[in-house]
Length: 134
Figure (cartoon, rainbow, N blue to C red):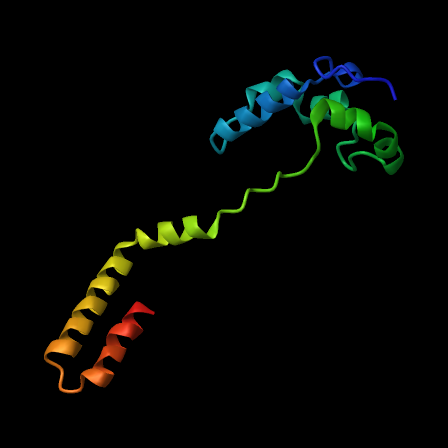
């Protein structure tokens, strides 16, 4: 297969910038606004014609097999990129910033202090403070 000029979309008439502008304009519009960029392309029928697809059924399997590499070179892959995983230590740090956890930790400390200072059975009263921490 010959090299594809990504800046010049060739037979499709739409560059990746055109498609990106269309998507950005769509994200900014309100519920009942018409998309100006789409209208400039001739509406959905014009967009389908420029992309050389059938508006009802999309690409045929034969057309997909024949044009797959060229379309991917111009427009990129049609998939959502994987999000990077958040490290466990970062999740723990973010959870530790919660006010409710701070309050529970303070209650556990108070429970420990009371269990060992004024409790009548300190050998078992510490369990309440430990349970709050868990």
